[in-house]
Length: 361
Image (cartoon, rainbow, N blue to C red; front, side):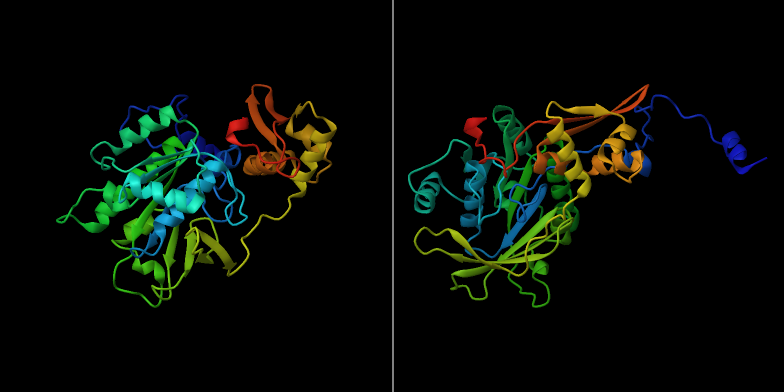
């Protein structure tokens, strides 16, 4: 008896339909199944600076965090590049829980003048996470489905005090709830938080108030600080799950109080050109009405050395980049006759035309 035959006798036939009602059921995918899935990747709201997911912006009181997040909110809601970084325009909800409408009015006028936007929404009062905040956010998103960023300033105002609880457990539970909401809705969350008083000369990220559950639960963390409190110059130290560490040096404009970028410690990382995507782009230039066929036919059309399976997996991984940089949608349909790849031109890239605003869509 061969090894394969012995395994076939001991392993039961898989169920066609998983029993989701079984409390012991655990949904899994194999690595091959994962590679065969075309999964859409959300682009950064501010390319090279504000990545998708849950971001923690941390700094000492009065260091300028609220001015920075208002600047971020304004640029995303208007689509105007921030510090020459490309923007994904979207509606923004800013929970300014430490401010008043009068203060926001004065700050907005000082920073941006008389021109406003209907795509930036403010609230100065909101419920806490355990008493209905998520319901409020869901209600807002139903009325404003183009919203892609919610700012909570500050995070502590959205939480309940738990003086007798385990701080790490409380912080982890809060961040887990925020993460789940972000994944379910596809909305990015920017949480403004404070540093603790005790400095740390070795690692600025150790100054985040609370436990390690706060930093561990975020997709990216930005530490905002100054070498001296009276300085007009500040630093932004950025780290994340899938992004390289970076330091930005910014300076407050004394006239409009906006933060201006002075320098970066290193250039933001950019994906190198992908010859496969270039070939797909050329194929669609020759076939502007679209292209469809099997992976084998596509490999032949592209004249690539990649096997059909490797090619489809490459495109599964790079489908978001194909759409973002070339305006080409990729769809890999699995039928009884086999897989069928469909490629369509859906939009112009930023190289071909000016950015389209939300008013023009």
